[in-house]
Length: 271
Image (tube, rainbow, N blue to C red; front, top):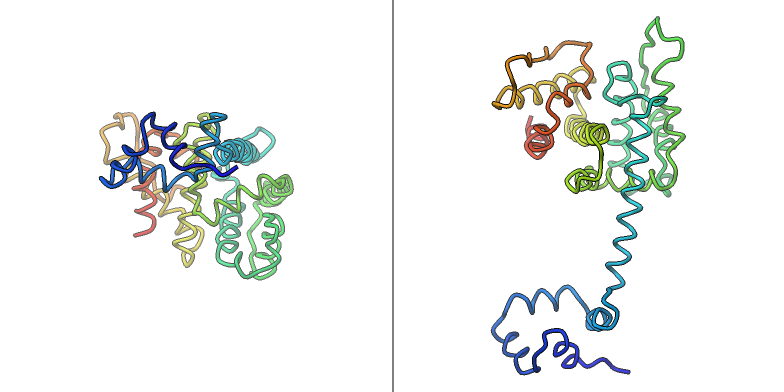
């Protein structure tokens, strides 16, 4: 049975069709909004069932995305994981990881090996193409770099898909979840850290590991010192202090970091 546009709009607005056409001729925004957002079938579906199929699907997708995001973050912050990718003891793994993400973004479209995307596979491709070596500290029984690489084997299909989406969209999906208040405090710190580091590594590929780290600390310290939220007890961290963990730097005032994340990313891009 063919759906009548007049019948649908009459039921939707509760008035006769002549009023609808007057509104349409008068270019009322509500008419443009509805006509550009919904099909006639979707409007009729809502009138009959109080649901629109595409929004129900989006809700289900949001649940999957949130599930994958939390699993992703918890892999880094759990007790038997790294604690944070920003921990100073994992600086070599952090450097490798974000170099892999940037390399994946630059090459994903024209490399069939990234279908489906898997971070562990991408890491092997990166290491094969780049003569990358990291010194192992004498006091490490198990090299932290190997611990980090082993962590990548725990990325399931949902996490890999979520990560691929973030790589292609410069971590906007992760930022959206932060803004929607979907994470606890530790997850939020880790999420913001990953967003900032991805931008840092993407826009400053020519800088070495030490230079990237200095720029990260410099931008965060400038932000913190420029606000009145810092109390007297908060002393600025030295940019060249090799013992500072980047996650600890963000935790000094995570609310300030979250509020100014757009400015931080812009500062990284223009640095």
